[in-house]
Image (tube, rainbow, N blue to C red; front, side):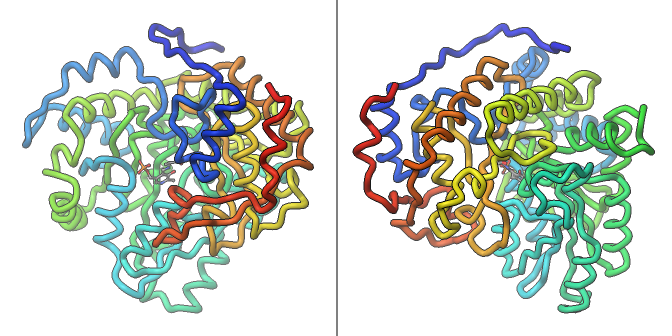
Length: 458
Ligand code: F0G
């Protein structure tokens, strides 16, 4: 069922193959370094790249820019309370600002944080506090085409193993990321959430939900967890988030905003500790580094995310892309998650070893073939983790249509047909923080045969 019509459009153009070749080389084979103008279909991220609604634009015009006590903040507080069930909110400039505020308040040097799977910025913020980030993914996450309903779950077995190993005193923080972005955007069940809450309680740790994609997760719960059949996304979201002591949120995801984030909790002590850090790093706690108008638009977006129709349309568009890619013979992680389709680069390029970043090679080929920008989430992005070689094609919210996805699938098909020509890559720069090297590092092809690629292509 179609849920929107467009009133503002933006012209896009496919640059010539020569321009794409030049752009790729100039970017050091890292698509983060390519100008957006040189990209045709941009699936780098679903973060802050979606289309806002007419109601969000209207809210933007009414934003209150007061330094303290802004009306837009009051609107955010009531949206967070109604949608997520938390009475205290600390806005931040985006999700990682919220991570810095909250994790800085909860972690000290030598601590261990557990997470179903840490996202890159989460892992980096844990490391930045001198703590260790340990992943506890469900076993099914490794099986890229297992038809399991909740491959994003937290493995309690693994959690207990770590606790027995390091001692409960060293684990003050347990995080549950819904949906599990680094594990192919797979959902987490409410039952698993309850068990993680009990586990955190038993070891006396604070239980935080990274709620970036909480509405998408609630949709999967409704579809796949029998207990929740027939319940609304709004009800499920409140129930699931209700098990947490606090949430970290990027407003750029399921609050449908172009900027913003927040920490929310009902714990008055925690809120005071967070406020002090927020003032230091973000801004006064009624704007937190955002303009008042952005706060206002985020408040409206948060409510829209749980309205009937929104998330169904969203997940359907991801499924359309997944189906087209499968038809084109491209190996993908199934079932697809809520915000992106993840390609299996190991199967795509069995000849390219992990040390030569098969995922990044695929990212480069998708750009070279069709101006499509995705992101590597394999051994380039996660250097020390034992994880599959994935490429994520993230779908911005309310932005692209079937024709765009057809182009993406055709591009991937073309890359597949030319798979023998693809080369692995090696790093030529070595950024300081390994957890976030993929944003800036430059690479070069292992085989220096790029010149033959420019001949005879569209
Ligand atoms: N947590 C998760 C699970 C995320 O996916 C992200 C961002 C963040 C925290 C940080 O939020 O970007 O607002 O600072 N993910 C984006 C992505 C960047 O492309 O998946 P942020």
